[in-house]
Length: 395
Image (cartoon, rainbow, N blue to C red; front, side, top):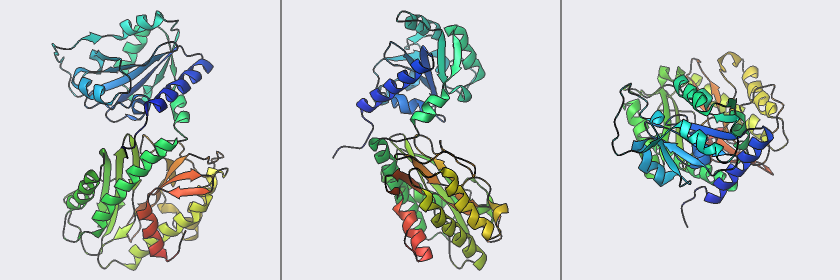
């Protein structure tokens, strides 16, 4: 069996969907920006993910996609991109230095030349832009000056297209979640008392890489009092007997990201710590029945927060307990208690059920789900099994 990945046919369909949306909104061409951090849009439309440099995909209403990159990333672009037309721009050179870097072997184009090329196939009076919120002001201004067209923010087009996942996308997310489970399980089963937080996450990350992780997007870690850091990085703090362990492992596979986080503690932990874990798991179990097609998203949020309210812990609930997943670790939808939008078949979501600042420590539960005709299927058997074992109940 071959490696699961997104097919060229699916990328073709994505471009067709984008062109349809462009026509509906009067957009003549669209430029989809990405870099090492804000990669999700560019990866979705081209499979390319820059390192150090920037990139974009340029699509005219009547033209084939053109991938834009910088010289050091050319070979990576040739390896990854599903589109063969690859051009280089000085505007996309290494993002961390002010110096003008000389690349004597590179052949550069420019936004002005690209705009002229597109106009040979049709008018370019309105340029759609995806990623305006992620790019530098100078780059944005150069694009605007070069194309001499109205700039129209098209972020919403990709946000909507990415909400519901294809079977191949779901399979990639399932594999990312499997790998995350492998890494997290290795860490949970290791002897962590007396070791540093860095040592603990090394176990998880190493096991995940060995299991096939394309990238470790992040590993959040806080033990003991450091569990109160909502998105803390691992440090050389020594893990003590009884410490709460707040650790989230986000794994990327073929551009898709799944996060695993089960609230646990090591050694002889207190009743206060036990209560935090218990309440989080009960909140998850109250919320999951609302993950079904046609159900308003607000009901999941209300069910989770209802448990916190009953326990008098609402003051420790710092953000909504659910968000979408896909090419980004957190993407639309991101519902709250007033969201009227409903779940639909093919949506993929991740719980983010959290309590921070309690005496017994802080933690959260991150478990991925795909919305199916019958309800919701977990992407993380490890988290499900752990929660069921803790509570003595089956979901």
